[in-house]
Image (cartoon, rainbow, N blue to C red; front, side, top):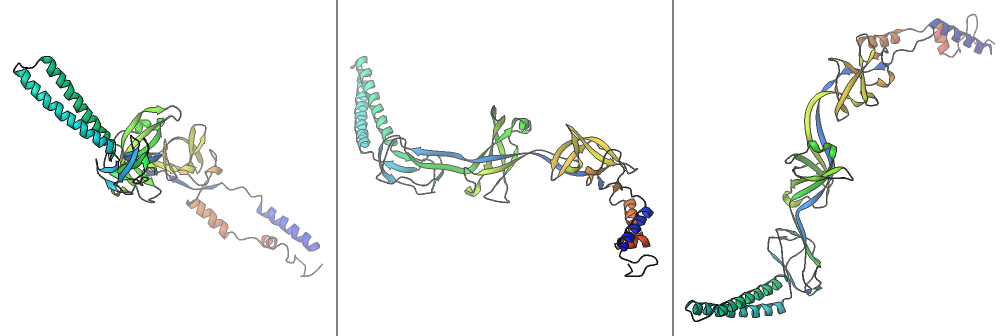
Length: 373
């Protein structure tokens, strides 16, 4: 018990000897603003669409006679894809063609007689009307047959086949989808606040999750003249070359539109503090005091922010900025003074009383032997 009391007294004496310690100035890191290359860009999510895409369907109810395409086949413009039964229409066409030929022959004869004065004007006009009616009937028969011949309206790739010969299809039934994916239309929306930086012909880059690490380049083709009043955004369409048809309609793609590029002074984002709409940084004065300086911020990139309004050569406090206030003395990491302070603390030798206090008062006091009560 007496040993514990002695240790307490010794520790108290050691504290008095050292004196009450003062809290040292906060340790911070400071560096001048660095030049950084900033890119102002619009980031958006776009949907890929085919350059041309259509689902062909029949205009009449008829039986499928032949199917002339396979799944995923490449077809040319006007290529015949399917044939519907057309027996009745073929017979009608033959009759219309015969009537047209007869009317045309009679019209030629009556014209010759009319020219020689052996036919009246009324007879000529009657045969002209008859011939015109015959031609119209023949054209109608040909159109009826054309409705039963399904052709590709443009070159592209057909989708999966869902019809078979012998099936009866009703009017409007989808038969096949054709897509032209030689290039991709990429549609994305841009807020109206960024509309001023967009223009036709502007380069864009796009990335798809199906091809990680790969970038596709295209250009802005058109900007919708109207802004959506609900989203306050405008629809933009870009065109992307698609060699090999790797990009597919319906893909989601991350779009980047570069607006401007410039080099400017930059500091880490955490070095900038704010109050309302005002922005500040703390700089270190030659007297090693923190000084608050108002700045304007610009573009941001990779954890750096563009700052405008810094004094030339000012060292901006980065790490430790939350510990400082305007006018406070600071210690700057890496300065000679800070190193000397560390060396001084390392070389300072504890006193004998301090050594005993650090040992927890276990050692014998003056005039006492170990183990004495």
